[in-house]
Image 1 (cartoon, helix red, strand yellow):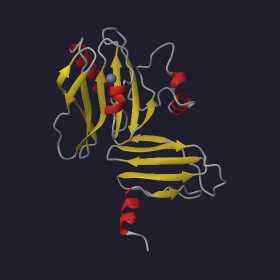
Image 2 (image 1 turned 180 degrees about the horizontal axis):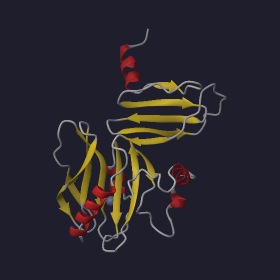
Image 3 (image 1 turned 45 degrees about the horizontal axis):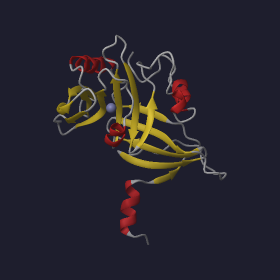
Image 4 (image 1 turned 90 degrees about the vertical axis):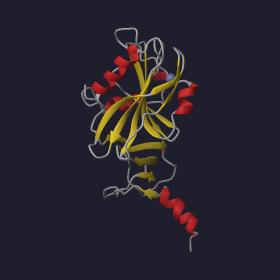
Length: 231
Ligand SMILES: [Zn+2]
């Protein structure tokens, strides 16, 4: 008989084998591991998110399981360019300092709203801020900040601050007509780069630093017009 503490722990993050013939069983909000013929995946469900992300390649044994595909679905549909452009306007007004904001998801309406974060400290190189107050059925889905006139990149502070599960975006070069950005999905300490409409052109100089093939896979999965943005 299993120790009840192990039953509770394993219920909080179950492991299941990927079905080969039938559909994947539904899950409640939370996290589970899926062992598939093509690797080990983590599936995360939140009010606003259903994400399947591969965390390891195939385990090296012939397993009688099905295969999984990575996926990323938002309950609110697509990331709303209009709200993010509103944030960009606020970022420009705040120059030369950095600015922070969040897109807050409301379960009742399945919509996002933009809220700017009140800075406790802001400079052209750093911002410390408080998250805005939220209703009981609201949660932060997208975390946004600017690097003012600087380039957008993930700093050591950003890596340390990006905890939990969310989409994170950083904008830079706000003094130019075409700002630049980086976006990523944050999954409990793992970062998955996301393609977005503010790609640095024409060099895509970060491509070489991404997990091999990841950006290509994202771009293949979301061809032009199919990106998770309402462009
Ligand atoms: Zn930053």
